[in-house]
Amino acid sequence: NNNNNNNNNNNNKDAAHPAVVQEEEEEDAEPDADKILLDAVVIQQHPILVCNKTKALRTLKDARRFGHALVNEFRHHSDDIVLISTLKEKLKDKPALQERVMLTFDPNDVKQLSRKWVVSTVERVFRNRKTLSRSLADLESITNALGHFLTGASCFLMFFVLMLLFSQGDFAPIMVSVGTTLLAFSFIFAESARQVFASFIFIFVRYAYDIGDRVLLAGDPRAMYVKRIELMTTTFTYWDGRVASIPNYKLHDMFLINIRRSGGQTDELELAVHYTTPKHKLEEFKSRFKSFVAKNPNDFVYSDCDMVLTAFRQTNMITVSVYLAQKTNWQNGEHVLRRHMTLLFLKETCEDLNITYECVPQRNLVEMVNMPFPQGMRADIRSDLA
Image (tube, rainbow, N blue to C red):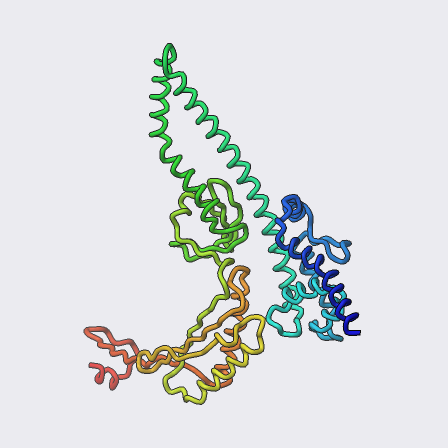
């Protein structure tokens, strides 16, 4: 019996060995270029298909409606909450899809999803898909422009080589005049050539941003979104709709911050409280703030959020700094809503705990010199003022 078991185990290992080798070969295999190009075409030309490929998400409104439909389909009873256990049960036969859904909708392991969170997640996925589509289109146009430029440069180089070959004999005077003309043009277009070279380096080597990225440029505190990337210029748009076009050679020398490529960011708020505020009120204030952060795990990093006293000014004011460590960066503007939500909470907490601040009373001395007294002023007051 033992010998038979050993033989069976050896046979099983031999049978499994080719499969293991096949998996290793698949991992080491190079990516299929045709598959990559096909995927790029699909992303550019085809919308996102949902509901067994019967519905297409073409606009942000369609994505928002699909998010609400997901909540209505999988919500827990009559609540606007989707339980992760429900999604896992529905996708138990598709483990790969289940893992992707968990990473997309519940990256923070909250176990339950609100309607607002599901809809915003679907909108974010839709925006990323549209942004990738525009990036691929701009990359194609830049590649075509680069191809035309290299073709022109090759023709010019070929002409220069031919000029050197025919610079003797009867063609010598002509080649001298042509060479002199080219030398003059080299001085005229030297600056343009430098700008073109700097643009190439910025687009293909530095590669500082993609379509849809939120960026900050040196000298401009207002954030901008990348709208279009071309070979020589980049078009940006502000939040209020204004459009700015900046040459790439200028961007090559600028200090640039890319918000999309940044990690989670921290927002800082400052409060002024009176120096007579009791210590137990400040501690209660901090305790409530930490509870507020804990109730919003999809928005804030609990361990990195804090409230500390940072300054004591004018002998009557204590500065309280509130640090909001957020789970995401400020690419899509979620930080504005989080800041609004936090400010409302701080306002209500200050009112509840009666935490206030009053300016130091200022004494104003008024001296009246040779000024007429107002009519109707009593005589005794006039004598006192005089």
